[in-house]
Structures are given as C-alpha cells and as structure tokens.
Length: 376
Image 1: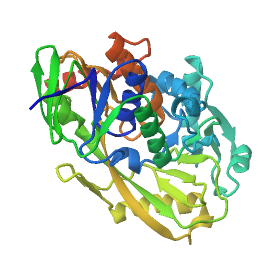
Image 2 (image 1 turned 180 degrees about the horizontal axis):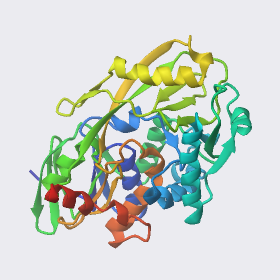
Image 3 (image 1 turned 90 degrees about the horizontal axis):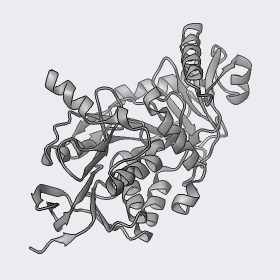
Image 4 (image 1 turned 45 degrees about the horizontal axis):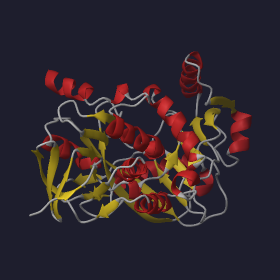
C-alpha cells in the first residue's frame, strides 16, 4: 500500500491534538491528524472547560499565565471567542484551617513574583457569591479567570486547523508504528502514513502510543464525572471550587448548573467507555447543596463521565521523546488541561519545527515518570 507522506502526523483528536496540528500547520508543516473515533470524543468533549490559573501547581503557573493571555485573545487564534467568559474563579474556604492553606499558598506565590491570586474576606466573598452559605469565611480569587464552552471550542479549533491546511481523519485508529528510514510509518484503519515527526496527543491511550515508539511511560486513567441541572435563575457568575472538598461549579449561559470537581466514575479503556457512578456522584451534589443551600431542590437533568490520562504526580507530559527521534508528547493533563490548550500546542509546534522551545516545560519531561517506574 502506498503511504501518504506528511511533515507531521498528530495522533489524537482532542483539543491538544487540534492545537498542536493548528500551530504546526501555521508554521508551514504539512499535517494530518488521526483520531480513532471522532474529534473530542473523550476528555475534551466531556470537559467542564475551566479556564484557570487559580490553584495551579507551581510548575504549571508560567504556562498557565501565558495561556490566560491567549484565552483573552482567543478569537485572534481560532476566529471565535469559544464562549469564554472571564467572570473569575473563586476557591472557597469554609473554616480557618482552609483559609490558612490559601494564605500560605498566596504568600509562596508572592515570594516567587506572582500576583494573579488574591485572598478575600467573607464580605467580599458574599459580594462575589451572594448565595454562598454563611459559614464560608473567605476565598482565593483569580479575577481574570473563567470558563468556556467545550463544544464551541472544539468546533473553533477544528475549523481553524482545517483552514490552516490540516487534514483531519476520524475513525482512523493507529494499529502499528515503525521506522522507515528517516520517517515513522503508521499503519492505521484508514491507510498508511509516513512522516519524520509524530505528536502523541492520544489522551487516555497515550501510554499505548508511546510504547509503540519505545517510550514506556506509566499512566493512570481518570473518568471524571459531571452533572447538569435544570435551568434556574442566576446563581453564580464565577467558577467556584472548594479548598476542602472536590467541587467545580459554574452556571452556563442557558442557566443550567454544571457540577463536577473530579469525582470519579468507572471506565473500560479497551471498550473506550466511561460510566457514571451515581453513589460517588452524589458527593458532588451534596457539596453544592451545602455550599449553596438554594440549589437543594434543583433537578438533575443528566450526568456523564469522560476518559483522560493521569500521571502519578498529576503533571502533564510535554516534550520530546527521550528515545524516539521526531516524536513529541502532549498528554497526561490529569483533569486540568483545558486552559493550557493554546500554549501547549504552540510549544509542541516549536519542538517539532525547531527542536526546542523557550517555554518552561522542563518539569513536564517524560523521563521523570520513566525513572520512577524503573525504580519501582
């Protein structure tokens, strides 16, 4: 079979794959993207679409701050605002011990020169969240944060990638990868492809793809669940999280509440299925009703779970393969990759096209995980 030849092949049709393909194409590369089901099928399509710098691991802060600037100019990148609203993000403290956790983090951030988070008292918290329970005593706030519409974002990145010349191939799973001279040869359900450069953005299956090129990178799996309620009167503008409990709460433009926070469902990677665990999901519903008593009688309309990869340290893998020439990895975002999409795509394109990047990604090198596995 005659191979289709490109400068780069991106494996994985979630937002990180689309972003990498877009930036590569705009950098002059001939790019095809291979997705074994359909674009946004798993984590990207099931995301709460939080756009936050609030509460980021310190290693992620520089990338997240650059990504936030890009989100505020997202129309310039993809021709659509992606439903992004910068109503802020608020992390609520229910008691003095939780507030001290926020204050200690704030002090550490300031010592590193960061001022994107602030601590607010109960009075300002009540102004930001008028319906919050009276026992809450303060919060950390990032006022330029917010949330987007995940499906609108997927459509925007897809349109932008296609306009840049990316060939998108759905229902095209990778079955084998081998070296062919200076290129990688991929055998797939829709033909054979060759390229000197590969981008592994395969999400929950990225460990399997990495193994095909000789990288043994240990990965776990998340099946984070979400709840959507019936429409209700305005309750919150910012995205709300909690110090002491798993919670992510936002109100959509349609008036529905989107409730998550990392509560886990069940999954089967081989079947590509994630299912809702209603007993576990009830914890998220209980948290919301205790922090916002006004929602106790609001009806749940639907719930779902999405599959994604997680690493042992909950930091992503971003960088060039330590073993496979021309291969770049972008996966393992562990439930907090949505906001990083534009900047990670730009960094991956720099790695592929120029062999390096000035963006601070050293903390995300795959070798940190490979070393832990070897030592285990």
